[in-house]
Image (cartoon, rainbow, N blue to C red; front, side, top):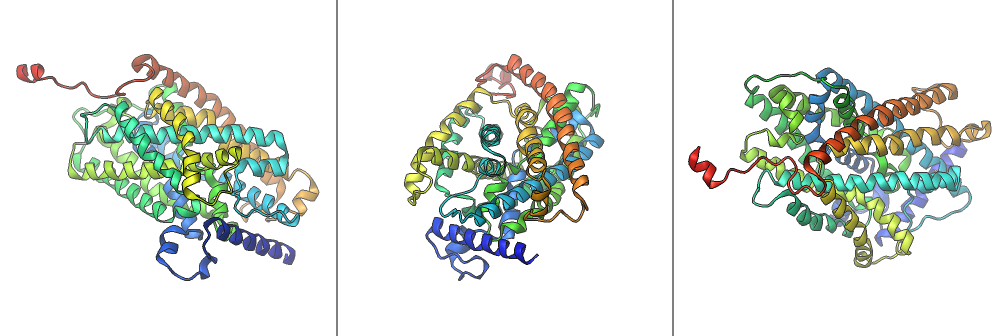
Length: 477
């Protein structure tokens, strides 16, 4: 036990040095002298990690969950939220264990990570070899790429409900430039104030959706027919799988912490808070508008325009830019490492080097502007592997030998008393997500996605925009 304690202390010391070197500041964890810059810029506590996880977990998807409830029905919607929330928290726990295992092994080899951010694919390479690195890199980067695309699509979708003088494609161009400003944020260590503000903005929007729907009441002849079709049912389920699959950035958030071993249950605590936002808002909006949501994937589109709604739209826009940064920062790190700029101290030089990452995201958001259906497609084809199947499989393979289990840097969690049960749980996660998430979810989400392509076409100028009334129409109405 003392050996494990020494290992944790050594890891904490090295990580603190890494943070100091990266930022060029004398950041000494929780004992550092208070300054305004430290208060807003240097975040490495467990609270910072909680805000980062909660803020990153629920962004634009908050607006699509009522759409998923229309596809699933209320009971299945709530059950899937709780189930995938707990499942996501479990695999985030596995990722944190693998990070600590990798870190402790490297510390014993006297490997220094000064000015180097450890990423998920490096953990997989260190524990399982180059093939796992390639798998992790491919899935993680593709998921984060499309995760960034989704945030950009959401920006254009939301702003349209305040200003429809420009079409959504034009707004995508504009917000692509706005999101590109995230290249100036060096790492997750510097998201302290943004994570706090982002979660506040999402909280306001969630409770606005809840209260506004209840005040509005049910529309005339409202129907609640979900679940109606199998393809819609699994599309909705995979959107919820996507909702609680935001831990593709877990390793980067852990690496920004002063004491990363404290992360183990932070994602779970963040999920409990997220439930208070997602469940009441989705249930309320679905109660008020019912099956109309099947043709309105953005909840804002059905609520009447008021100052409260406009405030929610604006706050969500800001938060989506922040979340774009969350999703894109790991891609920035990968690109920096590829071109040899990762250890550059100049923020401006790193920002300039990062800009090429934003260009393909911009382009993809213009090709596939399908707000809502794209979430389910990404959830089924990418999230299922990136944050569910790969972590569970990697954990089983890392600790397959008796020696690895005996010398593990972290003990088994209190809720799993032995390794046999741990392997059973991991195997069930892999099988469930592979069959239900990737299999049925992949089939349903791609059918729905192709339907959007057939209906609106690629490069759709204004996806799901209501027809505008011309002066001639108004004159005769």
